[in-house]
Length: 316
Ligand SMILES: [Zn+2]
Image 1 (tube, helix red, strand yellow):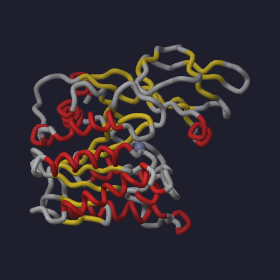
Image 2 (cartoon, rainbow, N blue to C red):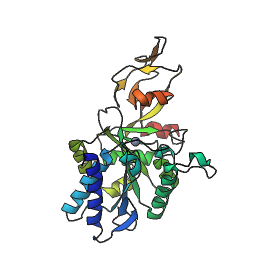
Image 3 (tube, rainbow, N blue to C red):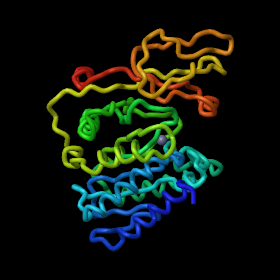
Image 4 (tube, rainbow, N blue to C red):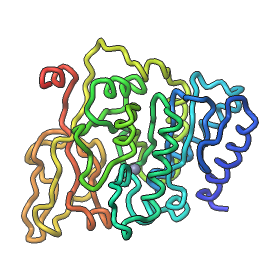
């Protein structure tokens, strides 16, 4: 059995061990809750190839069993795109994280696996009504640290800073992350359930990193995350620059990593004619695109620029 198969088997075995525990309820073929209205729902495998989320949840569930089922809060877990995980692909027909709240008049041809799965996940979340959602993802390129992704909202920024003071917080405009469709986080927001993403690392299993994330999640103070104190200022970043490929065939310089600092006018890439593509602002690089990912995208990546909550309040 490959590790890929073994991790999914492990999840199923752990799931079975929880079935006999007080509070257990099945919420989905690939998920369960330990409470009627859990404090935190952990979701993983929204992108099927971001496998470390499953590894983190397995460690978390094991630790919960070993510690006599006493995580310091109530939780639920849900694997979102197992068919894509089985193929080690981001998705089967369409990115699940662009498939939420799809219009009712979606043409039949676009109604693939993820269209229906998004509706199932929406139903699960609406019925479960978790108080908070943490969605586990993994970057394609290396990252200097795990980091948070969330819409730029004071309470969510504060929640993220409660989860970890060390992991950078990357926000995006609350009006929408992508024109291609709604994310799980955006769906949750519409349901008035606060939700954020943790981007863990480059693709692949990584036991030491998964352990680190598991420890961080296991000892969370759920009450502080759900209702974070409103006193100190918090520094974070906001995605302000989409590095549009103005010329088809433009490519990034090799070696950019997530969270890498960049300065205005740094050379980020090169056009097919050999002209330079300059960085539009000081900030950190997010989701640099290489290889097949770069070929299908109209962007080379994103730049997030420094902000803080005092600035956010002053602007609003
Ligand atoms: Zn992802």
